[in-house]
Image (cartoon, rainbow, N blue to C red; front, side):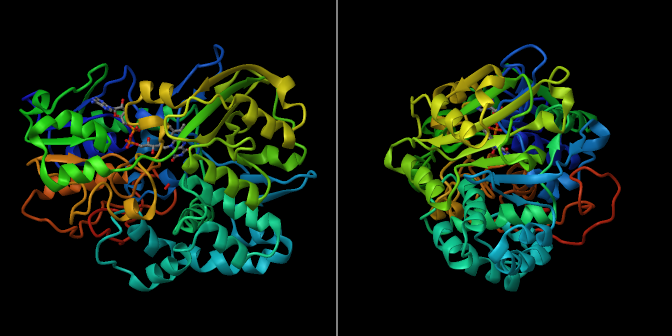
Length: 510
Ligand SMILES: Cc1cc2nc3c(=O)[nH]c(=O)nc-3n(C[C@H](O)[C@H](O)[C@H](O)COP(=O)(O)OP(=O)(O)OC[C@H]3O[C@@H](n4cnc5c(N)ncnc54)[C@H](O)[C@@H]3O)c2cc1C
């Protein structure tokens, strides 16, 4: 271990991003991964039947497409191919109708009837301002913004609870439900302050950068990141859990792709005082119950156009989604859960035998819940796709305990690295000028428990590595622009610089 300048603990997207940034700065880097495979939330595997490849965690990647850090990496040269489904999101309604999120604001708005003007007014200005907004939103919120005017405009809309935002802005169910489904990615109740921010960011990314999925499964993102890291001289060992900081004390710099609870365990009595208290107070969000299906054919949607969407949100109305997302905060599960579903083989046949398909879906449950949501989730699919059950050849079901067993970062099944309530969007994991730094010299946190939080974007790792490279002498998030950042694909090599500096990095919910 003492051969390396830096050790990164954990090979999730943020651990790999941190390692890449350190290696690019000329540091020798070792990544130690507890699991037998790299990737953390980016792993794929045959969990139902041979030949059916399922994404064990992330499936759809708006934040990767939006990530200024990913744009600096030649991921396509390292084997990554993005696929963009014809429709980004379908939101079926009872009666065979559906709302759709399309690549352009205009086309999306056209499908929303009486709300078409309201939708365009809500999203057009934000999409236009996205190049300025992304640097602010994909990093720590507590810092001096480089573009205060667009950020203030965004903040005035984003601060609303999603339920209030949707009812105030839209008159009819399709637009309200479409927005509520986007906001429900927040994993917080849609009545909570600032829950609208998640709906706005996800909607804007759809129009600004798209919601792509990687050919072959999410593992291919991890494999491309690892391949690039190795090309820079970085090393990765798997099946190598770190149990204590003593094991990595020889390295000058240690970056931890772990959540606060694990950090407390790794640090033992090294951590004390207010920082320790802040980590002990850190709150985790709801868990998820996840299903993967091997299917004999495509999902038989009542609204046929749903087949063209990479992601499908199932729960019908705004009220139903809001009810479902309130339940985990009350320690309850919903009989009619909001289900997030992806159908990758409709666009990527490499993941299943000829003519066969896979589907991926989950709903939110209380943190640590032992409830089996299989029937409730499948009822929701059947409601909008009668005959779905007859196409199920095999299924894999995992709840919070199994998710956490596979990846210690998924505490109680929380997939976001901690609650997304406003307090923890601001102080993540504690209120500090540089949230990645810790009171332990040379030790940094770089997981989704730091800004900008959950999702596959690598920005937590990138920003943490930048903080480590600056060292303790530079406490503020000073501007270090990323290398060349091409505008669209996360991996196109050699494109022109965008000239937009992040106040501590290149710049990118969840
Ligand atoms: C079911 C599910 C669905 C999701 N869907 C999406 C999606 O569609 N799109 C999206 O953008 N995001 C999605 N996410 C979220 C996304 O996967 C995470 O936000 C992201 O992976 C967080 O990255 P990370 O690097 O912080 O941590 P992780 O990806 O969790 O990686 C942490 C790594 O550290 C390792 N580790 C932990 N402790 C130790 C230790 N002591 N020693 C060594 N190694 C250790 C773990 O084994 C793991 O490999 C989903 C997550 C889940 C679980």
